[in-house]
Length: 372
Ligand code: ATP
Ligand code: MN
Ligand code: MN
Image (cartoon, rainbow, N blue to C red; front, side):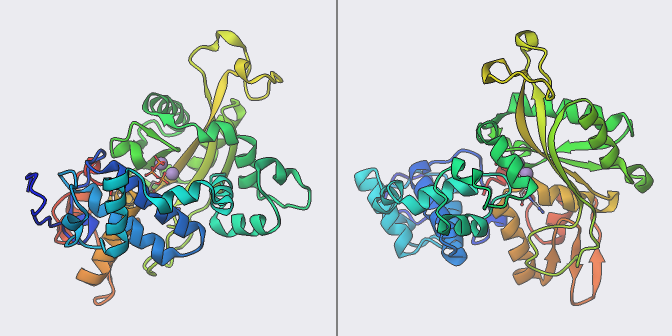
């Protein structure tokens, strides 16, 4: 359907996991507007409305053509009246008035700022907003209690706001592998998340760690983290031990893998400026020899690896749709530990992502087309 004809009927499969969604697309202005409205709804606590906007935006991301009229979208899944109004406004005026209004909405701006801090969700931000918090420095108030995550998030706020480039992600990978391979030389370490989907930048760098011998994984994360800490390479870390998950309870967003949420001090390439490691007391930013980067490390048993890889590659919406599809269309429960048949009460093993798609009766979608 690569016709310019505005009468052309566009069709798109209803689940994001049934479509190919590349990184770049044809309708960015409209998609940006829909995603902003989705975010605004989420920040107001309306998850259902937020999801509706996210779904509409995701559908448009998979379109191979640039929309010429709102009418063209009327047969697309999840593109109802509200979505069509947004499309029409952008096509006619170049802007969407509802989105414009957000720019001057103090609550939205403030909630966006607060939730952009590592460790701060909508709930916390809302509470702080009600307590009068409007800017980062308001969090210095001793009456406001911060968790350790949030404290680190505020301390390194400026660095963590800067996108991590692929070049930096590769250097983080080198640093992480070096730490892990010290303890288990043949450990498998894979960069997942947005970078595996071909993104050129991200808000963090995600890694999945596994080994055929379960013993090799035992205690490994702690040893590697302690080592990095001793080298001044860690600014913060929070390790969550593997929980015996209610593995196949549905709608559990968190998985139970052993996970380390870290902030790494990535040494600058140009180290001529200072010998400043984390412990050094160089205070002016220009002379700092490192930059803070958020890193997620996830350890998975070998037999769960394919599921963890699929689950940690994203995008978040693609994952949500995979799980929704599995449940509603196949009566199977999928998460990053495995695939489970509630009917037969048994797990269905798989050793590759391709196999999981096949088990679900889906055409394989390579990582670079999972940018839903
Ligand atoms: P960015 O470039 O902004 O980091 P991203 O796609 O890598 O984008 P992340 O937030 O790093 O986004 O998440 C990567 C993937 O890991 C997502 O698919 C998400 O569903 C999954 N994920 C993140 N946190 C968890 C968690 N606690 N449990 C299970 N899966 C998670
Ligand atoms: Mn990521
Ligand atoms: Mn992450």
